[in-house]
Image (tube, rainbow over all chains, first blue to last red; front, side, top):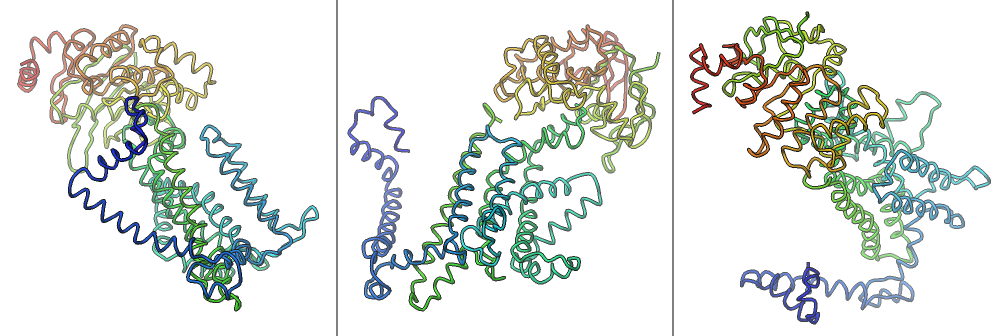
Length: 364
Length: 244
């Protein structure tokens, strides 16, 4: 907000420090109560941040062995240097690490490409589906001379990204369909959707994952064996879509009744009305809760560790079990928290931007 | 000649509340009907029943010879013939003015985009708003939005136009620009049913004025007679109130 001053031509000539002092006076110390609150919060910040920075940076051990770390007070960054490949990639064969790395690079590249909403069309959607195929191809191999890597070697960040991204890509449209079904005219479809949503929301994701790993195989026809990763993925999609459905339903209810009536009066069919008139408005309204759900789900994928899939959190925990490097769990968890934070914070920032870009000219 | 709209002993309830009681009404092609009455008298509900935004419970409604009932195909046909203009415009805020007009022709009538746009621009010129074609509804004034809403309905080439208090959400200085468009439309021979309290408009274009109270058609007369010489005590009271 302090930038506002520099935009004002009169104030632009002010030396920066003076501008900063003015900003402080206006925003932090305008009244006695405001000053007191500011001082308390600043004090708290210094008190908490100081020791943390000391630990993480100034007193940290950058070189040496576990022994050096144990002599020092600060964070053992040597541990991170030693273990970050394992945390990021799990048991994936060391000599083939370029494959998951490339997969992640493709993913991040496509994320950046998709940022502009002017590029949102059917082609982009197919790019994302192709991305999933590329992931499968790169990670699994076994084609075109790529060495095959068994699924239980997959782990770390690629695994977490697979579960979260495929989960989001599939659960969003499914959630929309469930929400439409739940609010639609067909009584049977409505009861089914309602039942599904309430059932799935009524049980913890952990129990769904257990069911996926233990019960799914019982329902599958003989001879068809789905790998555990896929079963977990299905459970995650089922779980996420129930939550997405409720988010979308909120949006459907928030669109003005007049919009439905105008579409009806023009003779649009149910699907035309929904696709062309209602959903574009409803989905825009619920961007913040949608992203909120997506962020929640991104982090919830870490629950797959209880059915022994080595996602990012699992590899972190495993890295702590190395007898040579016992006792550096704080470092490991701060590191993995940072990775989660980078992804979740990006989603949150992007949500802000989307909200802005979708505000159609003037007031809505 | 067959009437465009024919209601026979039509009744509607909202739960226990009897909103429309034994409505009988016949509207010929090109006829202009103004419906007025105190608020809560069922006049909006009546015209909303004509394209089934509200479903009636018994009695018959026929639009252009097609019976209006649970048959979805009939409903689809009827909605293609009947245009509707709402009190609050109900333009689609996420679409430009031009897209608002071309959406239904493109998807319902399957008209190619260029053709739909051409016709839409013609209509926008007719309501004197073609220079705003690429703006969004939120950037237009109320009067402009309502004129766009009228053009949007006309894009479907309807035979009947329903107006549900089209000017009551407008600032006073914008009422005339909307009424002018409606008068033009009336002159072109459109069949119109209009719920409004604009008595000037009623006198100028209406063939018949229908006065409703408590869900019934209480009085039906040509505007001259209705305004100068109402017969029913409730119409007299109502006119006394709105004319001060």
